[in-house]
Length: 76
Image (cartoon, rainbow, N blue to C red):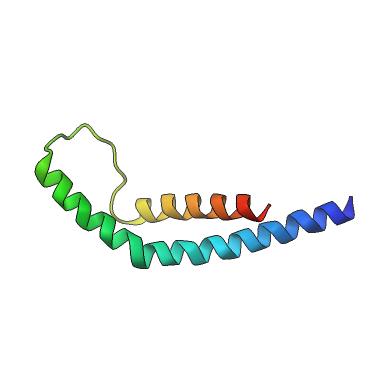
């Protein structure tokens, strides 16, 4: 049981570390492109019923959660 616990702990640590690094890469490389694309999309389609995260902290937290969960899943 101790071996399994150590294995899971190592996978969680590796997943959290790599998830944070992937999140930083997304914030630098991908998010600016998404924000620019959304300006073109909102100009072409005027409908206010869609629920999208705000461009600030909410979007960053959702991205962080998705990156952390994905990285931990891959590590496990």
